[in-house]
Image 1 (tube, rainbow, N blue to C red):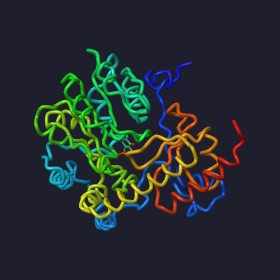
Image 2 (cartoon, protein in one colour; image 1 turned 60 degrees about the vertical axis):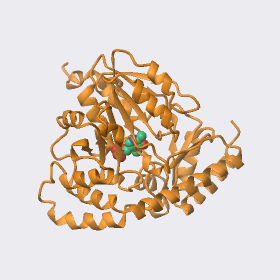
Image 3 (cartoon, rainbow, N blue to C red; image 1 turned 180 degrees about the vertical axis):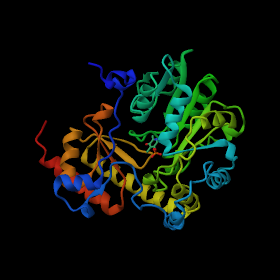
Length: 371
Ligand SMILES: *Cc1c(COP(=O)(O)O)cnc(C)c1O
């Protein structure tokens, strides 16, 4: 019998599925818990919420929602350009930076194209690669971090794209300045380097690659950033890419005309100008990472030293620990889908949330039968 499913694109049959952090409402319903007592330390969100300035700006556009948004988001692009000392022509906006990763697929991937990623890379890179029928080339990590020389060696004449998140999710590892510059130097100019900088604002001394793009020497470099993490606007869905104007204009062709909604455009402009909210989040994060890491050290629990807003810890049986914490109203992220079945990723919350999570984790581990 004929069946429409037989007409599905073949890539769908083996496409990996993204497993998101569990929403508070769903966990509350499942466990009969009060949603207000649940804490979510699962998706690297900002525990302080959105910037108050962004909230106010977003309210003012509600009454204009009968109008289409500015399709080129010119005010937002100008504000971003001024913030980073570049031109609007260097910018592309996405419905989350995940959409920009998908633009990379639309623009550069097809069967026969190789895509180089480090082991333990962000789950979306393999998904986009498979979606467009390209071939994933995974380079083994060294101590959980990307092996830059290994990635350079993995490049062949068929390589079209290389993805590197710095700092990386889910490991929290960071690539050094020398390694980044060597990567830029040694990767052939016809291979797109996607530097995913979703957590760059958490670094005290980030490597600023904007000058590399402005120099005109790195027309194959795309920086991806997001409003989902330090800016506290994950629900708004907004990310941006920075690259040479030639690359940006090519990518603009695969972007839907109104992909950035009016609320996001208004909220992001205000959020960008709220340095205080960013600084407060960064400070809280530094203290929180240190809090978790010194506790794990004292407990004799291995962890990967983090440069981002989460810590990856070897709790043993990550899935079981995740489930037990969830019953206590604490949502974390099990790492089985990354092949790290003994590990758990915990996002940094407020000091009170961190303390509650740690206390529950100690209880759960103490009650856990020996493996
Ligand atoms: C969270 C995250 C993003 C951001 O995704 P959005 O679509 O902007 O919410 C991108 N890359 C990495 C590595 C991330 O961890």
